[in-house]
Image (cartoon, rainbow over all chains, first blue to last red; front, side):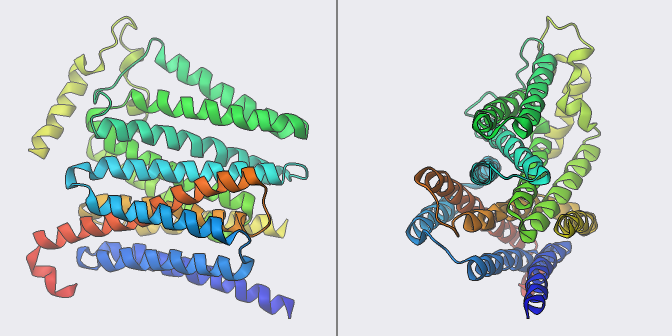
Length: 301
Length: 100
């Protein structure tokens, strides 16, 4: 009896994933894409229904209230904004997704903190860091796209070094979080979140102009990864699968965009700083890069 | 252990399937596709639902609630924006209108 139930559950999981795949598959033809979008939305609704049916809900009022507020706000904003604001809005939504995944990882890590298996710990900490990086990175991208921040790349003194040091610190705290006793873990988690937020800012503030779509695409891939790691710690195959799919698609789109612009991904994220003397932080002055930007504007106009 | 292997398997399977699915999408549709995958990544809302399936403390409820608002915003807004973008496509290409 129990086994039949397990098999049925697995089957239902795969059914939802299959519907989602169908939704993405429909994106091959422009006139079916709209249906594909609705199909994917349906798949996620079905997934939510499945989770509700299986696990039940404890704090119904909190869930209902937050759900109504979040989705109402999302729908309202998506309907109201103008076409020009859409890229900024997509970046903002992406950031919201990242924030959601690091919040969930955090709660789950706190809850299971005492008896944590290694794999859960690792994926939880990764979800925490990636979610936080995506959150702040997307917010910076959103600011740039909506002209709240300066559009052109801003390079700090020794920027690459700062990024490296920050990254090393995050890795250090991640390792620490896995080995320190339960009491010290919360500090590590909070430190990871703080440092990752800083990392996201440092990492995306030096990108600008024509490279912005690449940044958004990469951040999108990262949200997917964060969702997948979130799923690993919670133990939900649906989450893992959807997250991994988004991760894959985001990575490919990033790659395709880089190739279309004839730029290497590495050069976009670690710009020419190394080649030039550090005292002259004006990336757009570089002739090669200026040429690329002009090409882009030509195409746009 | 079986569970872990299954999870890794699901991860790899989805990654590969995602790769093959996306590599056939025409360049024209890359922007709406990005917007839709953005909406799909709000699948973390399922994680938030699972989080709320047991009794939680006040702090957990607050953080979970924030996660819920964010994820719902991303989910609904993402699909709505993709829908708007795709509607724009249809206007441009009048001849495929009858399919919708």
